[in-house]
Length: 429
Ligand code: GAL
Image 1: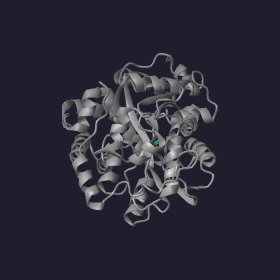
Image 2 (image 1 turned 45 degrees about the horizontal axis):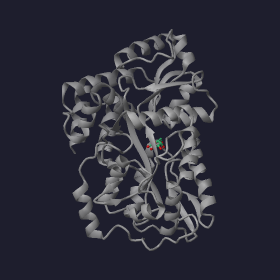
Image 3 (image 1 turned 45 degrees about the vertical axis):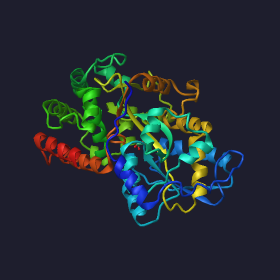
Image 4 (image 1 turned 135 degrees about the vertical axis):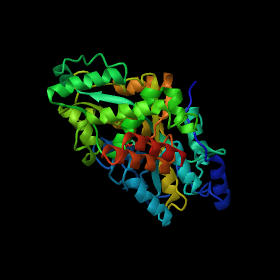
């Protein structure tokens, strides 16, 4: 059964919205130009964390389509560097609380979106789904994640997969490993990591805290399996149980195979270690493929990828989407941006550059790379499990508490038992 965990917040969201009269406040603001979008001119500040490298290239591809579709509105790039929004989200919150929202901002579908809905910070944009004809072009489970009490709070731009290992085939061969035969589970992977370690290469590259949390979520998926992993977010799986302890032990062992300068690196640098052949493996979402492609590293010879061992059959799900903040200075400009984000042309151009797959179901898979075609297939057939590090599984406060606990653990400030207790407290908070 296809299912994405959604956790609580629905009643709270409707209360907040009722209290602030949120939703549809700009309903009459959109004009009806030839492309069906709003766009009364002026500037539109688009707030994301796609500030550099392949992520910036993705944003620029979308910007180019926007310029064609809405030449009267000027795109202003409000990106704040830092993978996974590690710096952007705090800054955004400060701006929202100060009544200084951008015209539109990037947010993940799922629990992260619920944070903004609960706080009355984003508008219901379901009227745009009708105006732009979006209701039938997105998968129903994605629409469900974006919907609270019949209101829809953002327009998705893409779907990424989180549980992917990227590997350098030359480094693997030097360790006597066959790049075409990925390990079946985490235990088998440990043996391969040891073989790489013996060659002097870094077995597994990782970066700063959020990338460590990313690694952690994929180990939990692999070791617990889809049902118990989803149960971590619905309350059905006990965070203090022996299965979780075993997964955390695996995480500890994996961290032992990583580069010691990890806390100073963001994802592009950690992935670059695999591209450069100083590391064998990196676990990263499939925005990483855009980095390989940008540097013309060939799939098969320059890199191989496979699901995190033990998580085959699962699609670690996350989706970026764009919002209309309450009090946006140029709501019509934001509507124009949302028109482009949701359009077929916008989704094809953006996702080709970004490594993700279109959220729309009507894009032609043949337009995309071989890797992306495999992701389209996995998304259609595998069990969808929500990403923790990228806002699908938990509210921001839970992710922040998990991140603090993870950082303490990987810097040696807590032991495994303490780590597990802190994770259980974080998830219960
Ligand atoms: C995720 C986001 C992706 C990608 C990644 C690395 O949270 O959904 O689109 O940007 O962070 O920064």
